[in-house]
Image (cartoon, rainbow, N blue to C red; front, side, top):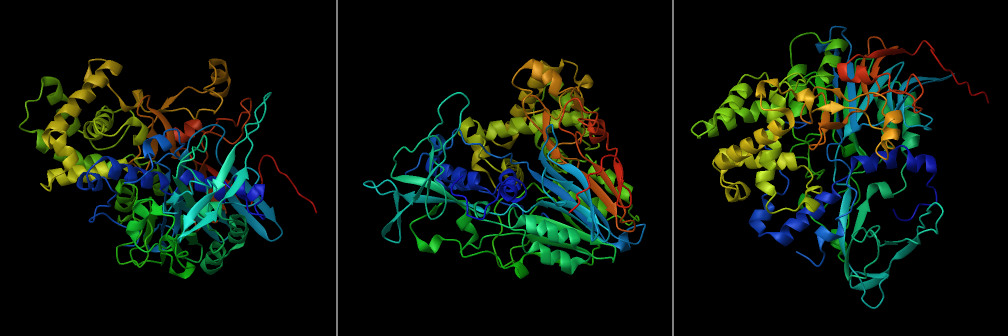
Length: 619
């Protein structure tokens, strides 16, 4: 996507930073969506869908010339659910008296696995964890002294710029009253048995033009993308340094070279330290509002002001509360001097994690595993009483009354054998349809990042009497809830039969870890997907992360790796790598961890043992 710096190597660009940065995104699509809202609706109605984070929820530290809809109709948008959980617990809250660490990065679920589990040992290094294939260092894991894990910070590291093109010279763009010549980069696309497609990328001072994916239409106004991941970065050096670290100071020093994507690093060591740092290149904006919309590319005052200084990035060491947890929720309060993001994950995963970690019970590695598999749905715990209150005087049908009675008798766990999760999640989907479907086309809904967070806020506003334009135009809160409940039940009856008592979440919510080639032909699916879909607990709002396709229920995003370690025993790590460790479908390790992924059965690795295959590199 644009020019490659002279020192850009395949190993660096295609593995650590660049791959992760693309998959974890940076909100350009939400800026485009916000711009679209202002083009299509009056300011008040548009601004109501701009991202907001509920004020009472926890933090980690406590109109233009461009047709957005057509420009990005075929754009590939990374899944908005990509995120993760991680946490560290100090020894004062653990049974062993030393810290516990847990990490489960949430990425796309497929075969072969994103991660390869690896143990690397040299004369001065002994480290274990997971890597991307070909990376000569452990990206996430532990050594004899320390352990670490990451989640996505989700900062605004992707900025769209409106660019004014010179109508007489299409390769020139306006900046500070002068026309600047863009770089035109030939990127031929090789096609088997055919001539290569001659494709050119136009790159302004900010980055590649992205509003004309297929061809240059010659428009006088276009959008370019400024993105930290398009700069040369040094993640591989950082990985090699933190692999050798023995304490927090050495580890943090290594983090100075981990620039993209920005990650929430949690750290634990057998000297008793727990720590956290929101790490990476995070741009400095003049105002946090700047990152909500595309910026004028012809104004110098709208350029990034550099990056947040490393020593001023959010950092916590040995907090009094005895734990640090992150789940892609808001990091800092409004008193933090720099802007990080306008878009955060719904807070439910973090709230449930904190709820468990704040217990007075001495915590163990098993408790951490149980928490990674926890399917408690705090969104339902918050909203079902609200929905019940709003609908209590409604003229519900017998079937609707039965559904409400079943939902009332729920422990708020998204368990595969229960009917309540199926009803609740389908109801939420129908609520969103009632609110947005009339005015926002399907082609734009994919760019509506953090839609769930926005919907939650609209529901809270409407219930609290603050009013919501979008809900009022759909008939008001009671009408929205009643019609969406009716539609949800009708759809579920069509799919699972008339007897509501026989519905289960697992009838719909299943995981298979599909191979990329399996969708081409049924024969390939037979070979590459050689394990049937399996019912699974959880959802996108539970610590047991299992986001799914709303049409067929396929769980396609979740914990790509689960890891737990008690630093009292730095030799032993507890892991699950779904669905397996080998990419060839005939291997016994191809999908041998699929059952384990569903059921939460961890395997152990030991730094002081070498099992299975061993590759020795001799200088």
